[in-house]
Amino acid sequence: MIRRTFLAGLVALAAAAPASAQQAIDIRVGAAQASDHAAVFAAVERGIFARHGLNARVVMYPTGVEMINGLLAGAQEVNVMGSIPFLAGIANGQPLVLIGHLHGDALRDNYADNNSIIVRGAANIADIRGLRGKRIGLPRGTGAEGYLL
Image (cartoon, rainbow, N blue to C red):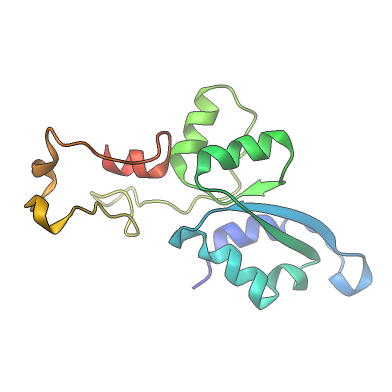
């Protein structure tokens, strides 16, 4: 199912008149190869943006940190990204606005269903306690770091 909260926020950027009555508005959307970014790709592929008067183009990034830098530099108008880069940006005084939020559930004891910690089978690590003292690779300042913490 396409994440309606995010898409509704983007559609709100379009003018109220039907798309056929006006020229489509160009919009660039920052995204990454993450499962929770699938809504953007599905919306482009299914013509959802176009039906609402938006000519959407996806701008790809490796992480939310680079997405914020691209957004602030004017490479795109909006991002779909994790909470941690957004919160870190706000904490550092960056002029960011949250349109819709997709991550986590305040009533659950875990961060998000679409995150995982992966180890080599030979590592013999069965649970989170087994990570103590191990080297862990992840992009800093991202949702991956927030999930692990």
